[in-house]
Amino acid sequence: MMIHTENLTKQFNTVLAVDRLTLDIAEGEVFGFLGPNGAGKTTTVRMLTTLIGPTSGAATINGHQVGRDDQAIRRIVGILTESPGLYDNLSAEHNLHIYASLYEVADAAGQIEKYLRLFDLWERRFDPTATYSKGMKQKLAIARALLHEPRVLFLDEPTSGLDPEAARLVRESIAGLRKEGRTIFLCTHNLDEADRLCDRIGVFKTRMLVMDTPARLRSQLFGRRVVFHLRQADDAMAAAVARLPFVQAAQTVENKVLVTLDDPEVHNPDIVRALVGLGADVQFVGELRRSLEDVYLQLMKGSKE
Image 1 (cartoon, one colour):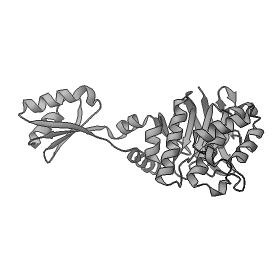
Image 2 (cartoon, helix red, strand yellow):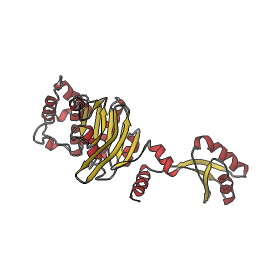
Image 3 (cartoon, rainbow, N blue to C red):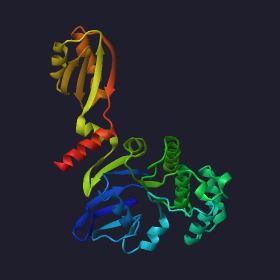
Image 4 (spheres, rainbow, N blue to C red):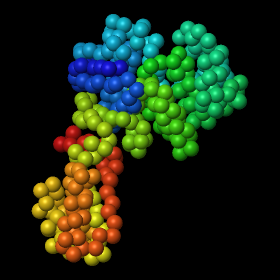
């Protein structure tokens, strides 16, 4: 595993920020770390990137142990904080040269050109970053995090406060990094972004509430609902469908039968045959999808209760 934690815990005086976090993230995976403000997400990132030490528990990055191999970990991770922290009076190129020297990047000039071109900033390389838009600054900050070719990238709210076009550019950049096989640990409040970019997500509030793929989380919390559009529907049809052994629930809404079940790909044909056998004219079939926001809000509600 590229990232492994076992009962990782951080306590500040009387405040328990991270409570026994255990997780495994594979190489090349995009992992979304979701939770409200104050949930402990940034504290977790700071521990994994060796900026602060854990109170108890253990963590490794590519086999290097946090607290013992901190220098080795810093060489293989890149970090984008929520605030880019650039030198506004210096050019983009100068900003990156400073960072390249800190990381002893062998071909600094080549790496700087590579990433400024990748993020479409090369033509503005001599301009002070104070003249950059927020989206451009965010892309420059990602370029800075990538200069030393880290195997793991930690992104904290990479599209926070950006306009839709800038946010799209940053998401496209993240998708490109994913294709390169980088391991990405993404902290975000943007649930649509997490749904589109992440292989798995963990919903976190001091402790891990749940962790799985977005699709399986939707299915686990709400089941899958399929809509059978009929020329004319009645309650008897829904009642008959509800009696099928693989159906959890069925109801009639206007000329539609809404069916909740676990494996529509397997059982939809059986339902269609049952409806046709009851004299129904099936016009078309579609699935109602719950959003990741629905999942998140349901989990937050459960954590409060």
